[in-house]
Every structure is written in structure tokens, then in C-alpha cells.
Length: 200
Image (cartoon, rainbow, N blue to C red):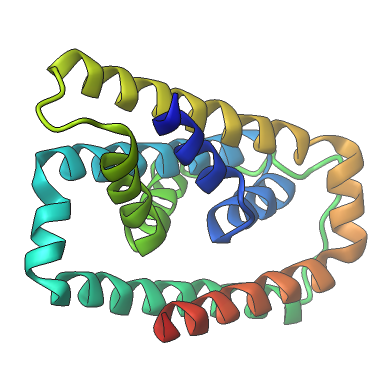
């Protein structure tokens, strides 16, 4: 239970993954938002498997590995900030009736979600905390499988819920009116997240 609680608290705390899912759902529709969330969940599964295979031991022995992850995480967050600022200053307009009907390549959005979470040291440290707090040394394989299955199921459900709620006509209409402010705010958040990541 402690493992699920630790993961849930980390997942629902506002951050780049949540904001990216909201923005994608409002701008590109429900399908794109869900695919981004699935990418985030899949990369969380990857981090979880690596953690159980000994990633935490590797990070303890080679602190520079986390610094490398942090460096590329900063670069990717700055890239997302650039994309958000570019969208904020662009001239295109969004119709609530048309948003989401433009074909978006699912694999592209899925990959973006994967990269966002793979470049996030917070995801790594969450699994390190789960190992330290909730998994006893020598725990049976079924326990590890149950933790992985439960946390990833929660992640999929959580990001799908965000995508569904933020792709409704009402939310899309609000986004179309406030698009520049929302994209600009996302740019600021991504920039601050990169700065905070570099300082930690």
C-alpha cells in the first residue's frame, strides 16, 4: 500500500507531465492527450523495471549517472518551453469545433510523452523511494509485479482522466480564448522546471 501511495502522490503533484497532458488534450484533442499520457505511463514502467533491476544501486555507486539524466532533462524541458513560447506568439487560431479533428500521429505524441518522463529525474527518484520505503529486500517476484502493475494502471487511469476532462468542448473553447496565456504559462513553467532541475 505504501508503494502505491508514494507513486500516487508523486504522479498527482503538478509538474511538466501533467501540464503537458492538459495542454495537448486542449490543443490537439482527446486522442492526442491520451496517447501522451500512455507514453508517460510506459516510461514510468521502464523506470520501475530498471529500478527493480538495480538502478538505485547504480545511482548510489555512480552519482554522475543522475547528473547526466538531469542534464538531458533540462535540455528537453527547455525545448518544451521553446515550443510553448513559439505557440504563444504564433497567429493560428483554434475552433472548438475543429480541435482534435486534425490528424495527429499517435506514435509521435506517444514518443513525446515517453521522452518527457524518461528525462525527468523525479520519475527515477520516485522509484528509488518506493524501493527504499515499501519493498523489503528479497521480496518475491509477484510482489514486484503487483507494484508495477498497480502503479502503471493508476498512471494510465490518471492521465486518461486528465485528457478526457481537458478535451471537452467547454475546455477547448476556453483554451481557444486564452491560448496565448496558457501556452505562455506552460513556457514559463517548463523554463522554471528546467532551472529548478539544474539547481537540485
